[in-house]
Image: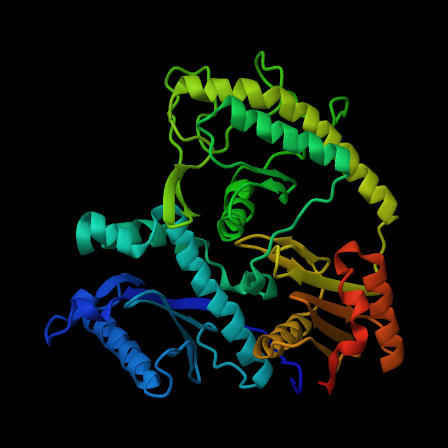
Length: 462
């Protein structure tokens, strides 16, 4: 476990990001053909070729030790390099650094870089595939030329939104925050979704969210996971608006025109009555049993009549549902009691349904990550997560940090719980009892609170 706290924190930055295929330039003098995308583009050609060639050599060298598991990361004194092969012979390489500052070499920091930044590389591919399909699809449709065009168009914009300083354990999980509802309100939403899909046969899948939290989804888990990431960290922040309130709430904003409901398209026309309105909707690719299918986000057929039909059907009912959900939100807050600084903060993740919950993160978007704990404690959480990833059995790890915080990690039945306790004078028994009480008060920890006795427990002092 980690030995000490850093005196100064440096902000990670993206040094380079490139995609290559070693089979595209097999002969000497054709090395540039291997490069499908390279950021930054202004790098001199020979340097691009040299960097790609070095990565190719590293991958081939590591294959001699483990043919089925090639290199995933390379650590040097000044930076790290991460490798990912999403499709056969297609390699994505990301190299972050710390603004030119050599990182402090310590076990804990290196492990977090591997898990967090490795997850970031995989997210880059998943986000590309959501809007463009696989690399192989582009090759089949238009060869290398079409693929390079798609990569340039997508990653030129996407990498500008890639803020490495905001990445942490939640990027490793890639989970979904669910909104808790009473059974009656949930049934109303399910009935609403069924009615919309029956009335508008062009709608293939529906996802229903409130305050960046998911209530209902008809998509496969992996598709919803990456779509949720896009919605909550990119689309919704760009179109931020006041929180939906009840019908009689003074906080509810006034709606211009003669509309009888509150709602609008976030992808599509801003005004359906405008004859010059452009009906442009992004395409997305979702998984099917034997491949994938191409859809449009929000609508499938791009016609004004269909948009007006959807707006007329969804808008009024959505206003009523928003009022019911807002009332439930108020009840939940009242039940949870007055807001005060708790003695513990936690992160919870369920690998089975991707449900996550965090009281550590006050705000988490692509560009901003506000946490209520010190970065060194976040690093300890990442270190514990690395240990959990190495073993299959249930486990518990307890760490006493130099700042007198206690950090507890529990893994059980595909669920993970990380707790930070601000009790400097507590002993191990008291810490364990406090975590038990936390599990007993949180519905999502039902399984965790019954298996304490079977944990393989380890204790560390940082």
